[in-house]
Amino acid sequence: MLKNDLREYRYSSIFFILVAVGIIAALSEVIIGEDSNLATIITGIVGSIGNFIIFAGLLNTRMGSVSDYLSNIRLINLKVIVVNLAVYILLTGIGILLGTGTIISAAILNSGDMTIYFVIFVILLYGIFYLLTAHINFVLSDRRFRNLGFIETLGLVIKTGFKLSGKTLVLALKYYLLPILLVLFIVLGGANGDVNSLAFLLFGILAIYLIILVFLLPGFVARLSDIYLDYIEENYPYEPSDFENDKEEDKFYLD
View 1 (tube, rainbow, N blue to C red):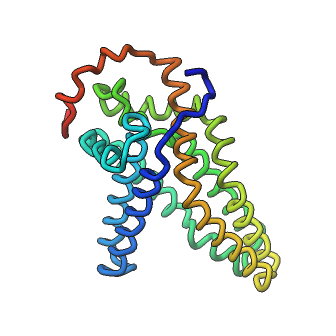
View 2 (view 1 turned 90 degrees about the horizontal axis):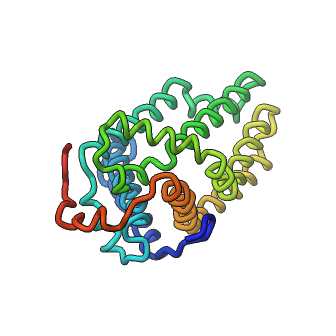
């Protein structure tokens, strides 16, 4: 396949899994309680598993049915769990350390320039972290790298993220630029004391776009996989015969 070609994928399979994850997360919050730590943990686990299944499916069963995508759960091993957990802890740590929610809320309501700078800093920090880890589950589900150790895998994730950061950023902006700008406008409006009609209007636009974004996510992840595959196939080529016995070996493995 030529570089930059768009690969086909099964939209319905990815969308169904996204919806299923959302429903399970919502039900856990309703049944257990929205403020429950257990509900948060369940939501995080279900989201992580769903994310891995979609990413792995785009590598291994790209045009497959929902059941084909779900079959990639067999690739989850201790390394997948630990690497994803490490990234999740780092991301959570950034949020707790900088008090993202508090800072944004304060900015919208009554804060000044320093808070705005803090908000912008948080968004940039999250953006950089995302760019470096955007392809994590592609690396973890790629058969080329299944025998790498934890440190080697984490290093490859960061290296891949850095190498592809430019293309990933361009792709992400196509989908996320509007909500980012809306959040910044809301923050700036709050800092200037104008939090009434304009803020409600922007919140309304943001809510509508986030709903639309759910339907765009399968395309976004598919294009993200194209970026990854173009890079990996050029720099880490392999022969199909290298993995001819994978079906017999694929199972939950803890090495």
